[in-house]
Image (cartoon, rainbow, N blue to C red; front, side):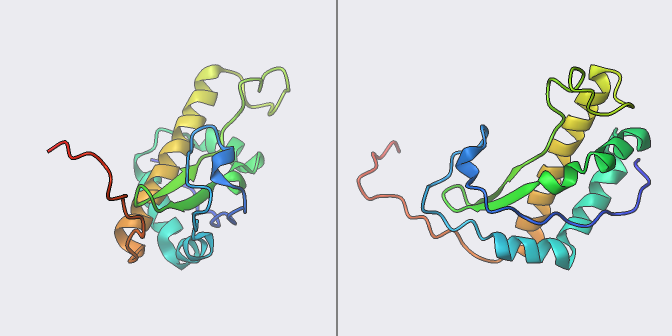
Length: 151
């Protein structure tokens, strides 16, 4: 259990999610960031953080590194209408952390892996809370009529 105060929710960027290596979203999509950011401030972030903190293996020392590197400000959440889900991009410590001497408390790949995995899990928890408890809109994507019938 991570016993730290709930941090402020991130301000969502205007980045096209397709610029992330791990996302592929329709180019003309409405990412609904304004709505998602409002939900984060209305309690989704705090709800998700508290649930995540109760279960995460991230230690308080590792959390301090996250805070000092301001990693939470790099979270992104966006609506993926095609998949009818909240997509996200979690920040992380880069592979060259040691060469860059990113933080004096980072001394092992184990720490870096724990932090990166923890932030990914936090991102997923936020998505789940947003979708389950805050989002009330339906996906507007409609599949084309000419798709093959595999049934």
